[in-house]
Amino acid sequence: MTTHTTAFPDRDSGSDTDARTRVHAVRQRYARRGDRATVRGHAYTLYLVALFGVFYLVPMVHARSTSPALISVGSLTGATPAVCALAVAACWGAQLAGRFWGPLVIQPFLLHVFMSTDLSPARYLGGIARRRLVYAGTVTLLAACAAAYLATDLFGQLGTTLRGLAVMAGISALAPVAWLWGQVRAVRDNLVLASAAGTVALAVTAVSRSAPDGAAAGLGLSLVGAVLAITAAAVGRASFRSIRDVDLARLARESARASQAQAYAWTGTLHHALDLYRPEPRGLTSALIRPDGRLRGHLAQGAVRALRTPGRASAAAALLLVGGATLAHGAAGRESGGVASVWWTAGAICVYLGSGWVGETWRGLRDELTMAPLFGEWWGGTLARALAWPVVAVTVGVCLGGGLATVTRWPEHGAPPVHTVLLVAGSVVLVLGARFLREMKLHLPLELLLPIITPLGDLSGLRVVAWQFDGLVAVVIGVAVMNAVSSPLVATALAVGVAACCVWTGLRRTGWAHRGLLTRLRRV
Image (cartoon, rainbow, N blue to C red; front, side, top):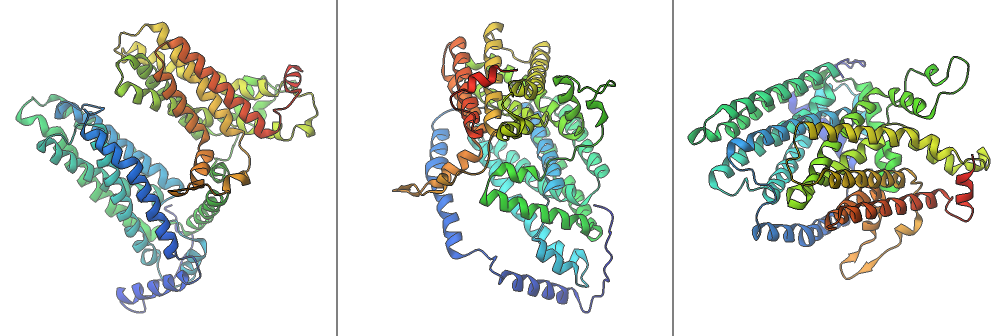
């Protein structure tokens, strides 16, 4: 977004006050078109927040105050690497989010009105960016502090509390400006910032490791807070200066796509909204065909189609490797309880995300099952042809990640290797079943919109949310059930059973779960 493709005259017919007055007048006129939130809408939002606080947040705070912390950070020196990793993850995640949906994305009509005036982009986009960055920083600060309090003992003492608050404030200042940076700067500049953040995190970790215990033990967290504050100030100043050179044509395309995605998310299915952000395949078209004119094998086709979107394939590979290592770590230490279950769940979620990004064969399978009459009844090889690549890719990625964790002796637990292998295999089967359930999703069923009257009000929205994230819900519940069972063999059998239920439900969504299904599956 460094090319200013549309030139507008910067005729300031007055002072900055006059420009602000004109922008405010346009926004007020636009708000009267009926897009402004109503009092009833604000009341419903407050109602949902109150329900969340009473039934979820308050019990969690009470349980945390009466029980030991789930994760013990130990000394301040030992907490520095985790804090550095959190800061880097927040920076990278904010940059990536800015590339798709940044703080400058507004309604297409309003953006078109501003682009048609003599105001420079900094006049009407600067205020929007500042306001949204303040909101994002506040939400990040509250979420980070709540998560640190509920999951760790970082706020257990006065000394660690002050340093922890300073670090959380630094992260909440860096993440919003990195969000803006990701939208207004070019890919090269984003890679530079990402590399610099990783390098500085490694340097700060090394310095904190070399510091002696005692008075200098808090050097790491203090250094992290100072580095975050300086980086946030520098990145924020450069980002706001780049607003004046923003590519308005690209911003208009992003705003139109975001408006369409928001409409899909509110009125239909979330996967239709996410389809708008899928990368376009490019290149390697001829690689799908052998020199003799025949199509390549199932695995070769899936690999070639995955390589046609290199960014998506790289993200899938990274998630599968990280998920495999984390899954092995959590499964190996499940008998110790506590943080091992968190690692296990996080690893399963990473594998679940990576299984969807590993290729486009899931969508092809859904289309073939939905439009099966167009291809005839002899479709027995459909499942094998479409599922060969994702199943093999997910299995290999998890095995490589788990093997790497085993070689580096990360899972330092006394669980037998056979039990760990069984639990990891069951988790992979569970994840693949949940992914099948999610990808076979079609349009939003009308019956989900029917009201569910309870003493707490209408809870039909919970069913809609559960239906939108049904694959993720199946993974989390399945891992919790496996963790609650003492026998690894029984836990694996339960995971296979849950995966079978997910597959059957997915087939029912496509209309193939009826008599004669097994006969069709056996046909070649």
